[in-house]
Amino acid sequence: MPGTLPHPGGAPATTRGPAARRTGGGCASLVGVPGPTAWVHAFVDVPAEHAGTARAFWSAVTGWPPGDPWPGHPEFVSLTPPSGAPYLHVQTVDHVPRVHLDLLGDPAADVARLERLGAVRGYRGDGWQAMTSPAGLPFCVCDESRPHRRPGAAVWPGGHRSRPVQLCVDVPARQHDGERDFWRAATGWADEPADAPGSSRLVHRAESALQLLVQRLGPDDGGTRARAHLDLGTDDLGAEVARVQALGARVLWPGEGFVALADPVGLPFCVTRNDPDR
Image (cartoon, rainbow, N blue to C red):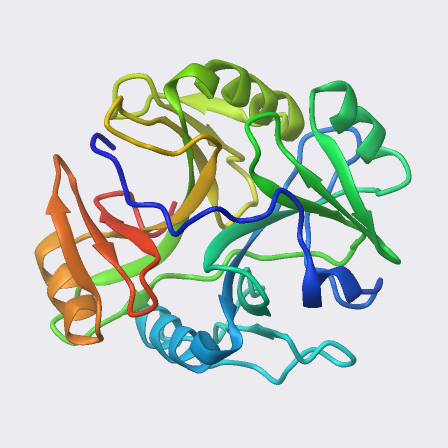
């Protein structure tokens, strides 16, 4: 995905504030320690004054209504598909907006493996561990063993379909190769060809609702550490871009096989020609 998506500002290296109070019952996550990760959750982190806007926008984009706040952790709200497991969540935070991911693992065992791969350990909760990747992307390892099933794509008026299918890790050029190698080893996922030169797509072919794209940022980007954004997959790029614009998204620029946009809070995301059923 060529081009440079704007970044929302200097997010802290590890999760602070509400997320630092999570306990074992309040963590969404992945499987398989130390083998391949089978599930990735994405979190849209926004300050309290933007939480309602973010929930409403991403609910309309996905077609999934917001669930109830998590018991004991009202800062978390999951978007609930009609079938399959939730994997997109909105978190109220006390820092600038951003996107982060959660991996399902064993905080008692998998964290040490990730540290050996170059991750840095942060705040420890009851059943979860905050970490940062070698290039500075915040993520969590959470203890969760329930089964997960990928939701289907939403069908919109006119017949086109879409679903959030990819979490893109945007990495400054000097740090890209190390960050790519980290996520490849951390997840155990297979490489697939990526359209953007210098980018690597990591896919769990059996289970995960989200694949990962580790993207090398251009020399015009002023960021100094990795950040993340969401990508929607659709079978009609033009129709989906028009739909999300009508919901409040703003077009940043068109690319080859994708369109970069910003949500009403200012977080960048992309509409892509990735298969919404992948």
